[in-house]
Length: 489
Image 1 (spheres, rainbow, N blue to C red):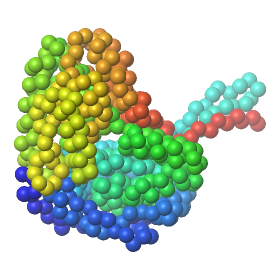
Image 2: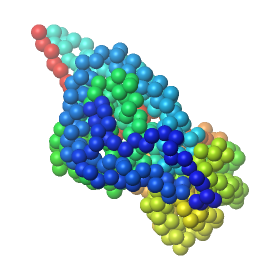
Image 3: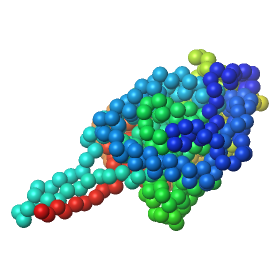
Image 4: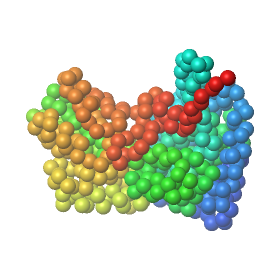
């Protein structure tokens, strides 16, 4: 438990440089940064290079050249390059999963989901290139023709989070380049290794130099991207607070287009007719990545007729998941990951300590081990209406359960939030399911399922959970701009 794990950090090379213009390069400043494993606190590298504003300028210049070169590549060639890249990702899946396992303790089986989605997203968007077109209207009687075309922005940017670096890399990069752009992507400084490594595969796949540029860094690099006058679009995934700052910076510079995915506090609604065994197993998804996922259902509303049984089921699952805390993430028997860094562990524990005064602690609530970032799966019941563990995104293994009497009451409670990313409904009543899919104020809903994500459907939230979309045709369109044409000969 917690600190007994020994990890071999030498199995694969640790990437530490930025990838700009088709090659790894040193950043301009000489300062190096340390990354410690969240499993045992041991130093994985002390040589991580953070990009400065000057490095961002260099990357943007490379992207400008890459954009020009990418525009000369035929659609068939673009598709083939994207498919080849997907195959290279699949071939290097073990190394990608290892880089995340040793740094943040991610179970390689969970990591394989993100890796599989990379391959599918690049193949999906590669094949969509030929369907990416505008609209043509019937010619007018006077012989004029009107049509609308969609064109790339040019140089665009993405900023990815620490919890799903590979998946969010693909969700941004694949549609961006399929739309014809070149991109400068900032990987999370807390979990950049898999993204920095995957950059090398873009060269091997045949992307022109500068089409995909990847760097990591702190606020300086992020602000440089948000304010850069030559970047015309930016896609950010992270917190509401930082998302607002990104949007403000974009508005104060060149008014670049900004899309935002800013997290969630997704409700899980369990009605009295639900299959409780299935609902409890599906709802255990809140422990995926130890609660560090924006889509995860972290506030549960259970009908009073089945509350006792459902609460008991969730308690049993949480306590079982807690038995593996502190284990080797590379051991196939490991079932629970740590939080990804000590800063997040401190945030989660602050929520838990405050929650003890705002709700009843059912199970969990403690740090496990002296080393690493392990926190017990935690469940609160009977929270006050204003409890932070009920109202705010914890981004940790914390579930809050509330009981309800009727449909209107639970609908009002579920919608009483500034978040609007996802929701989960468990019922056998088709009419009720249809009513709630209509009336819940969220961008994505799953009924009798734990998966609101799919590469072919728009991924995005309502309210302060964000604006704009990733995935699906809508995600491709968001990386382009429209042009209306009137042709008269």
